Length: 400
Ligand SMILES: Cc1cc2nc3c(=O)[nH]c(=O)nc-3n(C[C@H](O)[C@H](O)[C@H](O)COP(=O)(O)OP(=O)(O)OC[C@H]3O[C@@H](n4cnc5c(N)ncnc54)[C@H](O)[C@@H]3O)c2cc1C
Image (tube, rainbow, N blue to C red; front, side, top):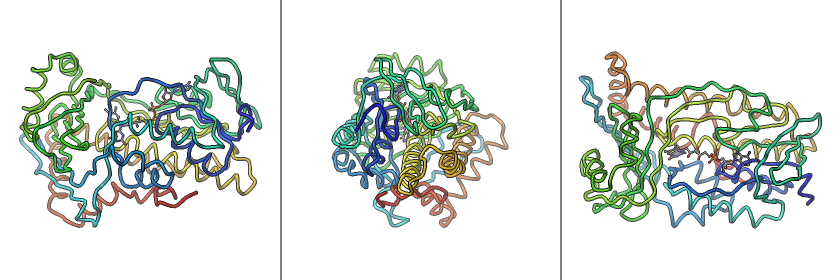
């Protein structure tokens, strides 16, 4: 392949970009991935059913399996001091005939597996560089690299994260809102077994979520107001351990905190269009969502599976893969899924922060109904694992 003029160029080597490049190149499209390597963070990702199926179909999951822990039960516990508190809600994958809702894996293992797989594909060239400028012509999009050199392709896929230069080049604006919250991330060892149960404590400042990792380890996303977050991100380990054991009600026994603390200011941001002018946006370039309910990368992988499916289909039909018709199909295929998740997470998060009693009541009532009404709870669980609005082929376990 001529690496300067492939059919598609993918910009950004995060999990969304790597997955898209693998799906496209694995289907025979000449693809270039521009992926500047960066130090891995210590986050983990809870991948729900469809995402695991997609990685399995692409042949990547075998490398991930040993590093991942199944999520069999998800508990939501109201840990607020509110007048109207919600009952505990327990989602059990067995109730909808599944072994698990998904698998939790450290991002470093997921990225290593994706990267190794990508580098073994004949139709994929990985360039360790940064895209500096993108210009759009009638029949091609041209990417200039920081290290010199250009790549011209019919379609560019912007997987370049929240500060996407692809989004800017396409002239796509976003709607954004910041929350008065910061998410802290820690990986923990603990003396009690987690029994593959993830527990999300809903507190007045946001969720405090423990998610199983293999063995006696769990990841923690601790959402706090920015001043508290600053304190806990710097705190001495013994003080931090005491606080984490207190907040987790010693559910996991004695805790040890592993090295590597993360800090992420919370915001929601959605691109007004997911594609325009020979550029399609995926992952956080298209949508940023708070880390509540494990939605962010699951949405990003559904973007990846959808754009890959549409592009492969157009290519097989001999059509222009960067044409407006392909981009419009992608935009409309992703809109309902992304918008509905953003609305749900935004409402849930804001209902925790509000002091307005009717809103607290509505949240408590919603969770009460989920607890008591089996069919509603089961429908919600199925929707979490297999969204009705978005089931691209890879998510159904079907090759492209
Ligand atoms: C605390 C926390 C916990 C989370 N937990 C979960 C979870 O359990 N489940 C879930 O589904 N999601 C979760 N998420 C969301 C998930 O982490 C993100 O959705 C995901 O990392 C986004 O992947 P991405 O590939 O779109 O972007 P990124 O991972 O940001 O990758 C973008 C890549 O593009 C590169 N890049 C940027 N600009 C350029 C350029 N000009 N040229 C070349 N490369 C460029 C960057 O270096 C980077 O490598 C969580 C998020 C947070 C903050």
